[in-house]
Length: 525
Image (cartoon, rainbow, N blue to C red; front, side, top):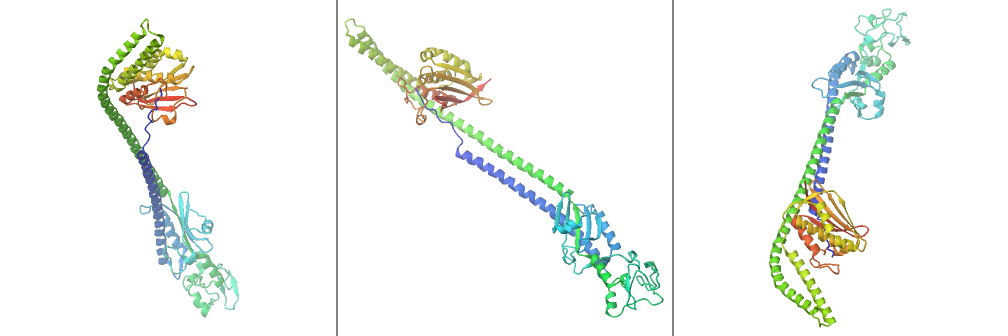
């Protein structure tokens, strides 16, 4: 006798859709946090840029205030740069100002303060921002002497003060038209401390006749600072080119910026982690709810089936009462005829056949009554392994007749069940396996835990197995593939399994045979 077990309940499309939705929500939250982190990082960079612009604006205003005839003295500008660097850590600054420098067209520093910088590399990089480890350098465009983000209309020249010069550094044209380098007429070299009474930068007259250019050249030289008014035009232009400002370089510390980025990174990670935990919790809650719903459905189905069986049991009891008596009478009369001394041999054979068929009908009637009986489960503690061994001993004659081998194993567990009904399930399943195997076949019985409070029972055999197309029909009453089967043995098993809230399934046993597996057994200590 073979019955196909009901397939196990799998995840419904609704459950799969919920899992996909939760995963999509988590990914959306993760993407949102990545975008927010990038926004915070860019805001912190913009704050550094704004601080650099403030420094540039301050320096531009100072240079405009100190400018005289498009020139700024280095000894007046240097203290301003030093003060800006020293005040880079005050409360108004979000990051420390490490260094600041004004560059000429060649990329050389005209005036600088703070930590040393590789100005050549900065200029050759052709980038407005150079982000390095723990520092960032902002490079203003070099065209047009743009020393701030707003720019300056005129070029600014940073010149050394007259204290840095001697008359050895001043080249002038003598009235006679000859060029004299490093010496006054008369052959004595004088420093700027010997400048004449005509004011700062007026060279003392030689022999009472100082060289003075006249005409347009004199007007051009009047635009120069007084102490450079008599410098040769070629040398003066070289000095202007060297001191003309064409760019501003500011280096600021990124320690605070990095701290903000690291802090925000950990915050975003925590948010993503908690979002993942929430999604996993929601999925677990839904799974538990689904399992609870399935269990309730099984219990309702078992209750409905039990009510239906109660009604059938009343009809079966009446049928048994009305049918057994005629069958017993027929059986008794057939036995009497077969025992008549003068009865022919063929009459005795036919009387024996009547008795055999009557016994078959009586057996089927008894199985039907057993199938229609309501399953009232009286739960208690059942030692499953002991019950298996007792059923094996009960079927010892059938096992010896088939010369079959029975192997039991697995974990020793105790379950909550009706002991009598549990033994009937084991008896029917083991008898079903013995009927399926051939001479010298083998049957395996395994018990094991599948969770903290759940267990499983498996009965395997190496018989022909159950065809895939028959597994959906196997639990219907009177469905059988065995010649001597009644088709009710495994139907009774299914009734008992459902009454306990368990599940049974029939699977293929590779390479041959069948597996009957009962799941959701409630394990007790």
